[in-house]
Structure formats: structure tokens, C-alpha cells
Image (tube, rainbow, N blue to C red; front, top):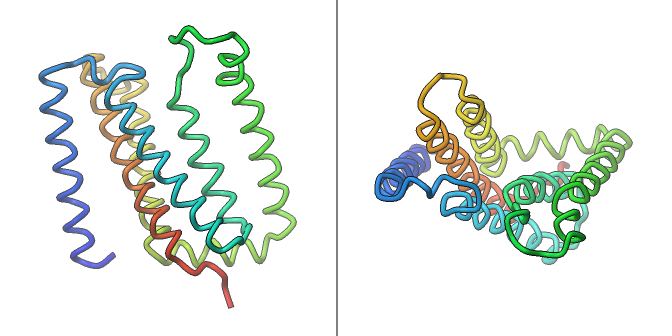
Amino acid sequence: MKGIEIIRLVILFLLNCFILFVLWQREPSIVNENNLIENIQVVFLAMALFFILLKFFKERIFSSPFIFFLLFFLTLLMREIDLRPFSLPQSIIYLSTKGRDFILALGWALFIYAFIRRFKISLKEYMVILKNSAGRYFVLGCMFYVLAWPFDEGVFGMAKNINKFIEELLENMGALLFVQSAFYFGKSRIYPK
């Protein structure tokens, strides 16, 4: 990453932290399920999916990285959407829980099968991605999600509301980085020579 990109990223992170912290101090419930911070994550993940699909519709290329990003962002998006609290038909609730899990597991299994069948070509495509902004932002986004896990599990023994805030804050930043990753993926050329 270039110096200006790093500065922009740090400013974005600090601004995100400050705004969400101020909002959380005023209304601690924004970290609850289906509330403000999670809904912001849903918007960010939907934006990431939009950029991925936009690339597909512009280029009509069905590559392994395209499928990976599509499945990855769709998995996170569907994980964040919880329809159980709403009064919807049981069939829709089922599709948003167990049905979702089955469909995603099938999608990931098919992806892994296709990846293994085209291993050398797929590996080259991923190496190209890791060398550009799409890959770097993706790895950073994953790091934020990984950093959020101990707070979700309460590993550090802090108060539950502080753990929840930090977890949601880190996931929020990760989701924002995924938007940037998808944007750069949409602009990139991933096909190795």
C-alpha cells in the first residue's frame, strides 16, 4: 500500500471508531442484534456484493476469484441478517437459518471442487489478486474479523457490553475494508499471463 492509502485507511478507521463510540455512548443498544452497527455491516457487505456482481455483469467472466468473493461476501451478509425476530412465515425463517446453511455449504463445496480441478490456474489468479489492492484490503478485512472473535467469545473478561461494542466495531471496519476490496477487485485485471 502506498503512504497516502495507509493515511486514508487510518483516518477512516479513527473516524469510524469515533462516530460509533459517540453513538454507543448515547445509545448502548446500537450493538444489539439487528440494530444500527449490524445494519451498517449489512449495508457494507451488500455494497461489496454489488461491486462483485457489477464486475461479472460488465465482463461476463466466471472466474474462481469471482466465485470466492461472491460466496465469501454472501456468507457474511447472510450471517448478519437475522429474520427470526420478525413475524414472517416459518418457511422464510427456515430458509434464513437452516436453508441458508445448506445452500452456502453446497456453494462452498462446489467452489472447493472447482478450485481443486483447476488448481494451477486458480492459484495463479489468487496470487495476482494478493499483489493488488483488492487482495490487501481483503486480507485486512479478514484480520479485523479475526480480531473480533475473542471479543465475541468474551476471552478478555471485560464487561459484556464493552466486548460487544469492540466486536461490532472491528467487524464493521472489516466489512468496510471488504467494500474497498470488492471495489478494487471490480477494477482489477486478475487473469495471469
